[in-house]
Length: 423
Image (cartoon, rainbow, N blue to C red; front, side, top):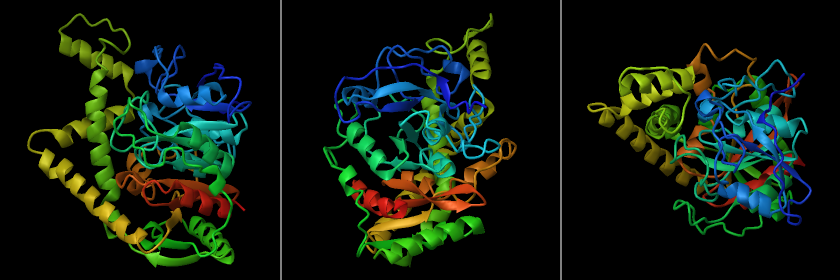
């Protein structure tokens, strides 16, 4: 049975030589590829073919990688299951009756099934780490500003980052080395972390490493997930790491703050899809407003419409201060809490996802259930920190991921700790 991991299968050859020569890479379908359609999993962009490569794709080709296709995703990155794609859901290669996670589910499934050696995804609130955890692979959400977003179709600019998915921590770190670094076309990129050797940090040496465990990210998680997570922590302690509890009091407001901010930014970003430059042709003969409405009715799926409506409402006159401004305040408090927790520990650890992979169709009728599943991942994006999801074991035959969070531009430490979990 096909996993439907790809929307478009097309080979893009890289240079003959380089650190990724001979390796295949799948690219999430919201990352621009010159001459190869980029749909964002949406009917709105079903026929869109970009005239340029994203910076990360340029760097892949220069490193000798062969791109093997564009992977399936939740429409415009809005989802946790890769079921909101206009091209149908992707199946989890571990158990085809379950979702692969989202929104980079196609990338994770392609790696887990061996359909690509490596993959790129994007992470706005967990969209790399969630499918990595659900499919039993490694996923890195880099520090905001480490990897160029030039050529990434925007969903929520202040939150999202492109990052790697791979079968091992070392190979994920190797891919991160290739795509990281400043880009004059993306003013949010920074020199910090440029030319860093991430792969050499995957040495498994955690002697003396201090790991903070935020109690708020354990409470409410599935008991089977917690048990697997605690076993992985015990293994780290046996290797010389030290663990202790820390607190992130503001994290209880993180999901609410994240969705207000992300939906508000989505409302602004997706206003460009107006039927003039992008979108399906319609037969509307009315005024422009009617044509605009018809294009968006036909081009967007239910989840995208829901988020645009909520985001527009949160930004509207009379409600901006009540919702959006308060969400930004909550974001500032959360960053402060992370700073304090990371002053007491080298890394923070939690289950990546508080639940096991959903069955296909299970969460579609209850969007709130899907939103709450992001409770452990969205705080990292709000704080603009790096995090990695590494397989911690299995529960009832399903993968469980362990998330490690580091200080800004300290990807080497989370790579080192994750490689010890892997060992």
